[in-house]
Structures are given as C-alpha cells and as structure tokens.
Length: 510
Ligand code: HEM
Image (tube, rainbow, N blue to C red; front, side, top):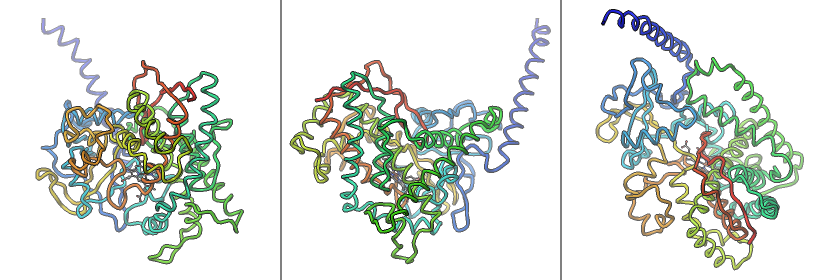
C-alpha cells in the first residue's frame, strides 16, 4: 500500500521543493540589489548613525510558521500592513519581530518599551524604508530629511515660526475660506438629498486649507473637476506604501506599469509645486504672512542662511502632503465616530452653540471647544492617521532589560496598538472622548499617546492640524445633521497614512 502512494506523492513533493527553491533564489536575487529590498531598512549617510541588523533576537516573539530562508514572508499583507501588524501585536504582545529573508523588523507597541525608544538621549528618528522611498519626491524636505542633514535644522528653525500661535491666528481666515468651499458643496448635496464621500471631501478640504493658509494658492477643490494634484499625490503615496511592503519579484512579474505611472505622477506634483512658487514670485512686492514667505525670505537665526530654491520646492511638496493626508484622515475618522455616536455629536453640537452663539467660530473660540478637541484626540487615539514612526538606537543598549539592541538597530512604533495598551483600560476599542479629560490624562503615562510623534522630529504642524480639525468639525456640526449607513463597516485604506474608504454621509441642513 505504501509503495504506490509513495510513488505518486514523491514527484509532486519534488516539484514543490523545486518551486520553493526557485522562489528563494528569485527573492534573493532581487533582494540583493540594495535599493529594492522591500522591508524597512534605515538609511545611512555620512554623519548618520549607521543602521545595522540586530544581532540575536531569539527571545523576541515572532509569527508562527516561520519558513526557512523566507522567514515570515507569507505573513505580510502588502495592502494593509498596519492592520496586519495590529493583529500580530494582539497575539504576540508589546514587541514582536518579522523576519523577511535576511531583514528583521522589530515592532514595538507596549507603553514602557515605547517610552524607552522615545528617549532622545538613546534613540533618534530613523528614516525607515517608506520615508526613504518618499525622499524620491521630497528629498531633504523636513519630514524626509536625515537627522544629520544641515537643511533639516535650517528649515526647522525657519519654519517653526510659521507654526506659532500668532501664525495660526493668520491662517484662521484662510481655513474659513476653504471651509466655505466645503459648505457650499455640502449645501447642494443636502438640498439634492444625496450623500458625500467623507474621505474624499476631507482630502479636498485639507488640500484647500494648506494651499491657502500655507501658500496663498487656491486649489478650489470643491469647484469643478478634482485638481490633478490630489489623484497624483494619492497614487504616489499608495506606490510608496505598496513598494515598501510587497515582494519585489512579484512586482516584477506584474510589470512596470505602476512605476511608469509613478514617474508621471511625480512629474505632475513637481509642476504644481513649481507653479505655486512661481505664482508668488511673480508678485515680488506682495508679502503674505505664510509658510511660503518664510521659505522664500527668512534666514535661519543660527547660520544666517536662507533656504535654497531646490529645498524650497522640497518643503512646499512636503507641506502639501504632510498637511493634507493626515488631517484629512483624522477628519474623516472623526465624522465616522460622530455619526456612530449621536450622543457625542449632540454634546459637541451643544458646546459649539454655547461657545459661538451661532456665529462663525472666531480664532479664540476654537481653543474653547474643549469637548470637541477631546473628540479629535480620541479619534487620533483609535485611528492615528500617521500610524507609526521609526526609531534608531544611538549606542549599544538593551530594550526592556531583555533584548540586545546594538548601535544602529531600529524599531517601528505601532501607534494604533500603543493606543490600545492596557493603560487605556478594559475596553480600549470603545470611543470615549472623556478619556481626554485632564484628570484622566494625568493618570496615564505620557508616552501612552503619541499621534504626532516624538522629540525634535515630532510633527511641526500639530497645532495647525488640531485647529483645522476642531474648526472644521465645529462648522459641520453647526450647519448639518448627518448620518452614516448603519450597514457600513469601517474599511481602512493604508497609503502611508490611514483613512476610511467607502464611508458616506447623508446630510440635512439645520
Ligand atoms: C492630524 C494630523 C497630523 C498627524 C497625525 C501628523 C503626524 C505626524 C507624525 C507622527 C510625525 C513624525 C514622523 C516621524 O517621526 O517620522 C509628523 C511629522 C511632520 N509633520 Fe505632521 N501630522 C499631522 C498634520 C500635519 C500638518 C497639518 C502639517 C503641516 C502643515 C504637518 C507637517 C509635518 C512635518 C513637516 C513633519 C516633519 C517634522 C520634522 O521631522 O522636522 N503635519 N507628523
């Protein structure tokens, strides 16, 4: 009996083995070309801490079914890597490791470990692979710059002024103007009894806000066709995301159509950015208190130097992307939670009425809407639209008292999971803005909540984003009742940032 069964199965096994070997050889061949490695590596340049592969991680938990040579390759989800990592962290705990062929990715999400890697004396920002890929477009812009690049400090010094409270006050009218575009459009939708796509409209609004407030440029996203910048940017980010997480030889098999489209998209983005700068330069006598004026005319107090033209282009692109995607995702998630929690929406609406007495919110009103701000904070807890950041160790150390981290080792901080750490209580999935009442915040460790990153490389646009989000929600709550389809199940798209997809709202004017 054994004979015939054995003779039937042996050839099939042999061909499976051959296939596996072929796969391994292919993967190795493609991975050996350094810039095509699909898994985050920290970049290296002169003066930067040299990135190394951690030596021995035997004690760090890892996914089941690790294969020889390929490691955890089959566990990767290139479409939804963050949600996959959340599922793994739920199973494996506050630290786990992926091993993809020869590359290891250490994912950290427990509050104590995150507090350690946020310690600037020992750790620093790392330019992980997705950020490295974005450098193709943004080069040494603030977000993608290496810590050691002189242009980072120069631009940081010059542009910090653009995010002071007085600068924010100047942006308030531009934010209101952009919101006027949204309400004109939503009025028409409400009158027609139609629905809006929350993520798409949040993106339009955020682009108009950063365009007008930062650069005096009107993308007029709610009028006529979508500005081509939006589609191109979204595809470029999706390309960064997918090429950072998929498997190069499979990508090769799919052909280079996506790469060609990516090149076209990058060219379009550059043209738009150049137009934004050219439009301002065509009016030399005209000064505006915005980011572009700082970029064009201010000098760094430390060095006396101004930004060079190439760096200005990189910064404009950086701000159009960083100032758009993340805030838009946050707004769309907040609308989702408000539509699912009518009691929260009612409380927020009552606060807006109380603070504004039915008028358009003034600049000072925004800081007074404490409950609405807590709605935004809680939204950013559950679905931080920038879902993580990379950290690299400055010197040999031991993480959590257990795991060897030789100098240059790096980790990824997985924010949505940090924001579900046991310190958040028994039901971290529930949406509860009261978690952010001052007395509750005081009870939690500071590093339990980091939606804007950490240290000197944390988000420079934090106050801008929070002001914009609270103002937009206040105006929306003042003007509309809105509902989502009870059948809708939250579906989150990952393109470096997170946003809900297919999420529609019906509106009634109040
Ligand atoms: C809710 C909205 C936002 C979220 C969740 C967010 C989140 C973040 C995070 C986590 C980082 C750190 C990344 C790292 O360590 O690698 C960051 C950096 C940055 N963000 Fe934001 N951001 C938001 C809105 C904005 C806005 C509105 C702007 C500009 C107007 C902006 C500009 C930047 C820039 C330029 C950096 C790089 C800073 C540096 O390295 O010096 N962000 N952001």
